[in-house]
Amino acid sequence: PVDKAAVRAMIRNGTGVAGRAAVIKNALQGAGFTGSLLAVGNAPPTTATALYYPSTRADSAAAVAAALGIPSTAMHRSDSYSEVTVVIGADWTSATTYRGSNRTTAGAGSSGAPTSAAPSTAVASSPPSSSLLIHGDNAKACMYVPSPEW
Image (cartoon, rainbow, N blue to C red; front, top):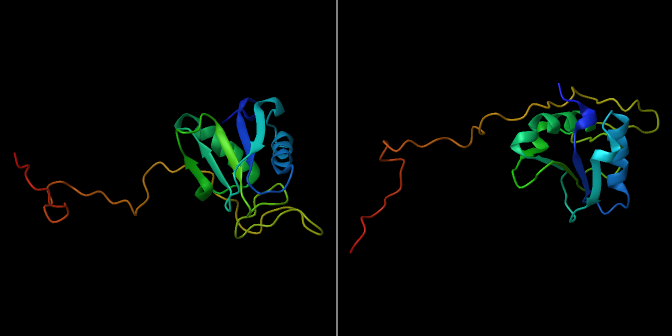
């Protein structure tokens, strides 16, 4: 298990709603993460919320995603990031739990509990099925490469 108190994360606001990253930082603190290890900032306007993480921080990313209700489909491994980074998009302008397409958030008369099963926080360990491998011994699957002319 991940020690949430030791997780470093950056929360970036791409919603255009002032103070949105600070709201999410406070939610993470309430879930057991350490405030001094959580940084906030702005991002260019973005439509969809996403969580980016380096390959060495998959467990930390899963812990942050679970705390915020971010589904595994919104998690992206990228070594362009040195720490777990949540980019809040226009699809999450209020509440502290990501609602996605089948989720609810706290509000009048709501407990804040999800209306469907909690999202999976599993990190993909294999490529998507749409990225089928092509074997070099199958001449019909490869493109033609002409011999060089000298």
